[in-house]
Image 1 (tube, rainbow, N blue to C red):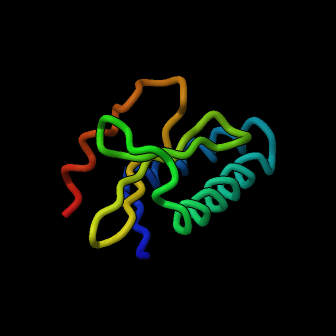
Image 2: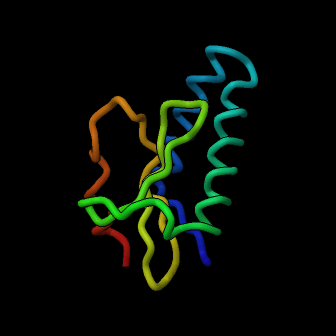
Length: 100
């Protein structure tokens, strides 16, 4: 399965990792690792998380207060957001419309 990350999601992860790295050296790198581990899991189990009302699925990170929101299309799996669990729910939902 082809995995694509929209630029906004990549930017969200980079910003969050930078923030955590400033808080404690190595913590930003740990966030990247956790996201990578979850994306690998999603690639193998993409249908397991329930389909939400907005037509997407999400997986919560274990250590950090973030989740990975994604959709499955015929042309692959699209990561729409690396979103903080306590900020602006579904602010990113319109990103799906940019996926072909």
